[in-house]
Length: 338
Image (tube, rainbow, N blue to C red; front, side, top):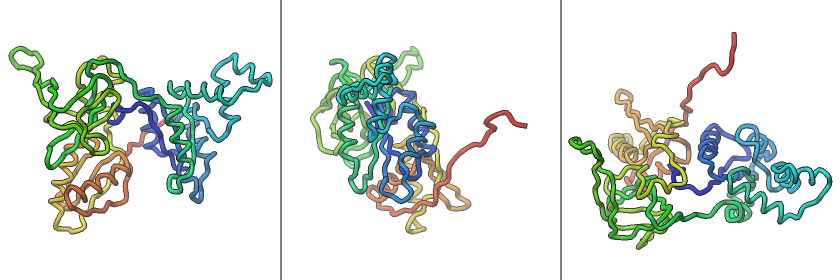
């Protein structure tokens, strides 16, 4: 769902485990939407970390346009290879200033034609500053496309006091407290025309949870008062969206786990709580096996499980654990065989 809201992305790959199936799924989604992307090879401090092996995996399985920034010669070769005239000058022995190469790489990265690779250890705060600098220098800044309203709802949340809130990325125009918003309300069965309803914004919150009086183009915030507006709903002029992700795209869960309450007698309450979270998150599916008294969750990845575990604790006061994840997959014949 975050593809609706992104200007750019950083794909984190473990320097020990390398490219995983979900890494391929997410990167190909980013590539399909032409979203500029950097790579960060994390956990280089762990035993078994092999930066060159993982880089080769990225270049083989994900994109040949990945270039390791720690290798200046590789960066120069990559940049020169993108232009025949520049490549000829490079092969003839001409040397280029580092700033010149960096500017060409930045241009390629912003247009998703190059994917710079950084490495380090987040735990030890190694390589993090160069990555943050690269996000500023090599990735595009949020752009505004005018004064006319254009935004998209990409997630929802629930507040005990304010009720249902929706995460909105605004691409153009602005939204303010108490401002009216026109939303679709289904089709009139008599005329066949789309009905519209006006809702008034009751509150706007920033990403950090603090109150905001308004939301400006290029910003992300949580808006309350829009009722049961659906995830994927465009606010304002849809033509101004830089990209359109169809609802349901990439919604197939990748792994399944059993969720286990700390107290067995809380199973039914846990089921109700998980179903409430599922109603907010289209990427969470809940299945209850009554005969076994087991509750299964189908999710996209392990990070989603960490979020679910925290939400169950903070919102519903329930301590849970998960079984070992199992990958949901299908096998088929990949090539002709006898």
